Image 1 (tube, rainbow, N blue to C red):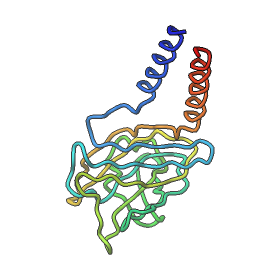
Image 2 (cartoon, rainbow, N blue to C red):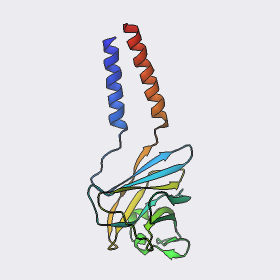
Image 3 (cartoon, one colour):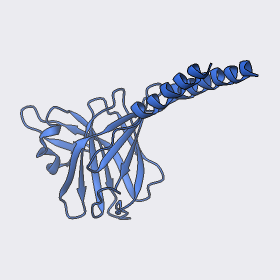
Image 4 (cartoon, helix red, strand yellow):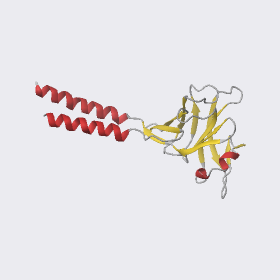
Length: 188
């Protein structure tokens, strides 16, 4: 019985270690994705390393069909579209160009992207040391991202870390708890 408990403990710890999101050395955007209602949550973390006020970011995703902001005062979100055939030609709201995005090679193979920016009227950029949450709708997570600061410089380009919203984790923990409870009942 002791061996069974040890094995269960080792399996559980291994599961937690390998299911945890991988740490990246650069600015990170994590996608918490729920495959059942196709909502994706972008967790933008400006804490390690930090950049001066972040004013916009984009996440490439060919299946992006809605982008919105909740509880991030002064930010807006929409889906940007690449109208270019041979060369990138990014726009949002079908008429406002995103010229800086045309220069980023990682987005050349994408025709849609989630685009979020600090509204100039309210001006609430993402300061150093803070995290904020942004939302979108898609069927396929895992995308490249690009971030610009208040000087207009692209400060980070990378790949999002996809972390599925753990609907099955609750089931796993319930099952492991039941096994553990059953094991302790037998010992008595």
